[in-house]
Amino acid sequence: MSAILIWALENDFIDASLVSYLEGGKDSWKTRPGVAATRKEILDAAGSRYTYSANTLAYDEAVEAGHERLALVGTGCQSSSPPAVWSRKVGKVGKPFVFNIGLLCLQDLDDAIFEELFEPSTAAPVRHREDEHQGRLPDLDPRRHLP
Image 1: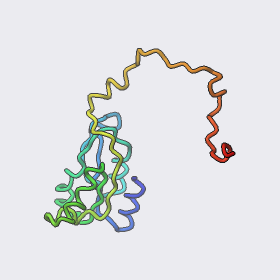
Image 2: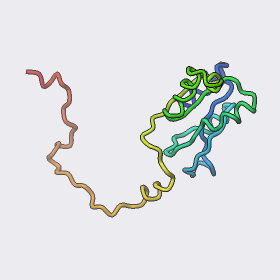
Image 3: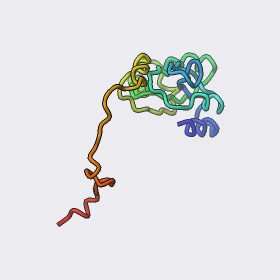
Image 4: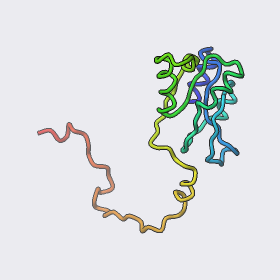
């Protein structure tokens, strides 16, 4: 993602991107929406976020800074809103978004679940019979199963 945004910025397609940053550094799970207008800012925002960040909330910050051609990085619900607003001619909010990157979103996650996810499990490990697959993956090539 970062490479695409840097390329778009350095080739004069965009002025800035609406992205998410981690609050408190790389060890944090908390995100905040923000504007990336330089290569360094894009790289500072790099990395996966396994929690929600409403990146569209950085729109006012971008406009106040004078950015006119924006990229939006966000989940489907975020990335679909500017084109929908623009096509319905509801104000001019959609027009500045010239580049739109939609991210896969399974669900909105709350930071509180992570402590539970990373605690050691007390469940017994699952054991498999060693001869079940004979240490190999099954043959899934359909050409080998034709009559």
